[in-house]
Image (tube, rainbow, N blue to C red):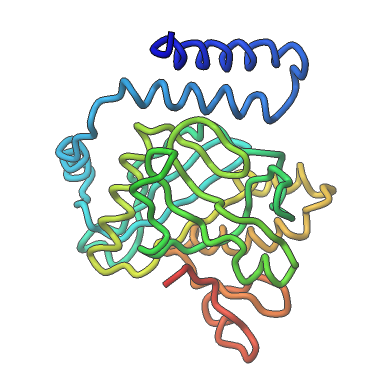
Length: 267
């Protein structure tokens, strides 16, 4: 009988989760459990990641593994962009690849407090100390939330990451297959001397049409502040230096004003 006990426990757990779907069909907790089970099942049958394929794709695009990296996310479009600065490009970044975000939490708008099941928006920096090759989500890197802006607004939260799988209670999940590639590029850039990789997270593609559409939204003023940084990258194709002055994001030369603090990772 003892040898059947693990199977009995597993069957009972799965049955309980299945029945739970009828009890709380809209429960975030229920769906998080189901997503986690799916993630671990998929992971058990996944193939080892082959970086040689990535290297070939990079060379075809004019890049190499180790070039400086920049990550940009858009919630509404569920899109992650990976930009890189190729050698001989004058420090300007080019788009290497876009990835679908499998899942994020909450609605458009910033994360406010621990446990609100909201994925953050804003400007973040990822240092080597934030990389986790042994993550329960396959691979992950921490966003260093709350940053100096979040803290100035008394926002709280922990363990906000970009990671594998397709389950989220505040993070951005991009599947194991995609995080393999994203992680490899971010890690290689750090190993080649990029101290911190910038990660910019926006509610939507911040063109004028979208800004007009959301001009009366409760977070419109916050988003207009984010758009300043968005526009600088669109113009220069170089991620701006980001700081915070008087609870507001500032960029490039403005970050040198007295009393301003730079947005930084866990360097």
